Length: 308
Length: 282
Image 1 (cartoon, rainbow over the protein chains, first blue to last red):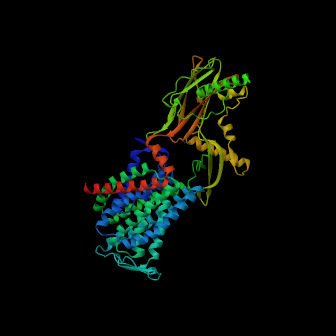
Image 2: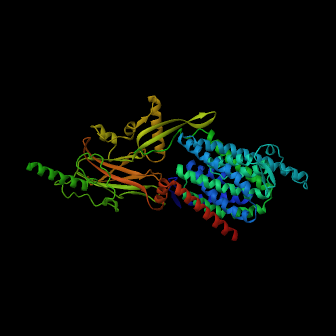
Image 3: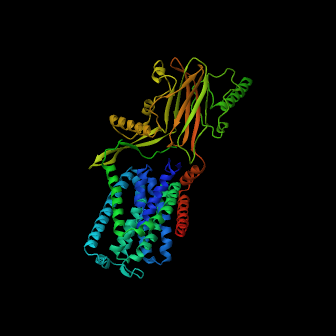
């Protein structure tokens, strides 16, 4: 069944989009991250213009994080103070990111920048995850009883000015670090249409030294508002948010998330992370091949302007 | 004094009569008429163009199977049938041109092993869509005399003005690149369409429109040629627009981007919240 997407201006199969959304939801349920980092490249693979894919995906991230935040909030797993400090950087970063996006779109380089950023980011994360899960696997095999290593050490965090006390995270660190982190995630969110949870979560654990119990909830909190900011700005300045596309992705995600959660409960964590790493590296490789391969046509069209 | 008044009245009467039938039938090459939006032509198919004032029957009568192309949520492209009648002898040529706009052509080049857009060239007055159908090979029809305003795609594209300075060789490459992309999108059909003539005076042609179709008023012109000369031309405006839900969404997005953004946020919050709550119960 084909449906015409009014902003992407093309018709596409409904079930393909629902399926894409449910894959993203499945990942969200399995790993507790948004899944946007896989859904956006997949949307681009099926022919949605990158600009529309990114903006509509940001819209989908809102639904994803509100659904997950619902649970985390009730369990008291949100460090509101940390969330707000992160958000401060996030709002500034995402606003700057949308301006950068608009500029890149105008000079015709946005598709390239999106692809390159995805390749760099996905291969870095996929590589780290592969190494980490291999190491864990080998260690467990040698010493099945071995406890997990120490999660973090503090260096930089304690030297910077503007120290703030984060009671829930049991931290006393400079506010500059979470603000900076939020800023970077905000830019990624605006340009790549991801929530950024998959960068934010490890950064909160390893960089800020937050306890793992509040990491997911706090990340969801920040991602929700940053994605809302990106959606709003993209719609207001670029008009690239396709509501129908986002709705189909969200509906697919709603169906996929619980399946993912159930799968995750049955599989060992190492295997799960290993699988995800392979998936991420696969998408990165495909994007890289697209960049390196001689294109079928050298030419493409930019924005069509109807002159008055 | 008196003849002037008579002339004026006559002139006005003629003008209003001409206006009434403007899109249907005109005896000579008309200037592009302003498309009469909301004309009776909108409701399904228009009434046959039997002129009510002209003393002699026109040489050429044309109609379309659909008065407009409606881009609905189920739109997957459309083929419109053009049909009509002409006074033999003669040959028929149909030219469909989409609304002109400025197009920017981007060219990829290899840079440090990666393919990225390094060149760009804008062209003004590029038709969104351009298709030709003819009852005989076009070259044969036009070779015998001046085709006048009937332009092949290549000729039409050579009139598209380039923006800025560039060497002519390179400009030609960009121009060919533009045609290539439009061909790929199905907006410049490569083959000349076939106008089928029956009983020596009835004709029909299929006009194909792809699913990725720019909106605007398209101009469907039908020419009657005798000995390579245009003896009659009929111009029909064909509006292409989104309708229904997709039109509302697109219109809302372009008119009130801020409000649309807020709407998108509310939609995502609502569906995400409800969906999440529901699926956890299951």
